[in-house]
Length: 207
Image (tube, rainbow, N blue to C red; front, side, top):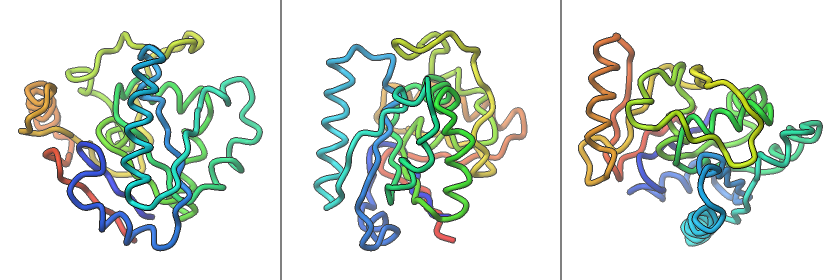
């Protein structure tokens, strides 16, 4: 299992990411955490992610989960054709709904554990791997469904790829940092193990 979890963007250790990947460059960018945004804003943020990863020598392409909401029969083969899955930040509850609606939430954790793909992500893309999303509503609003998504309930279970929560943007120059402080207090109060990451920091797993 190989994970590269960042607070913001690729963070300060891109060389460590490249070491995890070796000569593997085919990269799927999952933008689902931005699916509540107007199309122009979403495209602008996709372009920024494409540029950031391309600058590292990777070959990124958007992997749009909305294409699999109606039919996920090819999903596993399609996502497994990539070496690296990069999940961008945004709203973690929107992301979690997309993972469930596409059924990637049942496929991706297994592919990660089997080492079939390297997983990377930041902010919401890191948070969603935790056992639970309880408390993240102190940071991310619950009322941001993806545009065009079918009605669905809020999902509070994470993907359980890691055994602790991730608190991104901790004590950083970020608009959400004050809310992250409240989230950390929630985690401590409820005895939930966590990793607090400042912007620039990354959490790496290389088993």
